[in-house]
Image 1: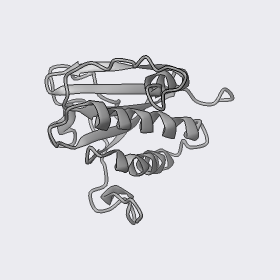
Image 2 (image 1 turned 30 degrees about the vertical axis):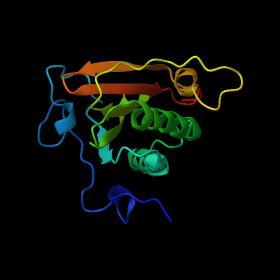
Image 3 (image 1 turned 90 degrees about the horizontal axis):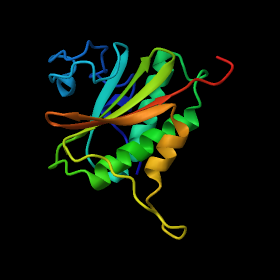
Image 4 (image 1 turned 90 degrees about the vertical axis):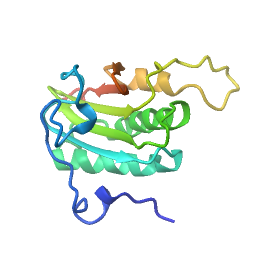
Length: 172
């Protein structure tokens, strides 16, 4: 079965993500808070996905599609971008208590960087696992840190935002 999402079908569906300003309750309800500068910059796409690890492939395709719409796929290491957003989304679906609510994925340009965000409703901070050499999991945050110029977590009044900023290829 092909894993699809409304934003990925046809011309990204009828609910095409829209650019927004920080905290705009109409176009960015997940970003509304007292911390208006916490969300991705003004050039952004965002979409909500069910909190299921089976949706990781849809999230990767969504982010690649958005980067193509920005016209920046040639500027950034897209395999790294896909891996980082996969790890961030998998962490949100595996470790966060989302109470059945969707997880929002956002992608935007933040100056020269490509910024990825995963918004979830669990206020608990991210805690890197101490994986041993034989563990099958527990290295996601290490991968995010290694492939990002900057990454972190922003606490929100309703949950948190985990973000990563990816630098362009060195020739840009």
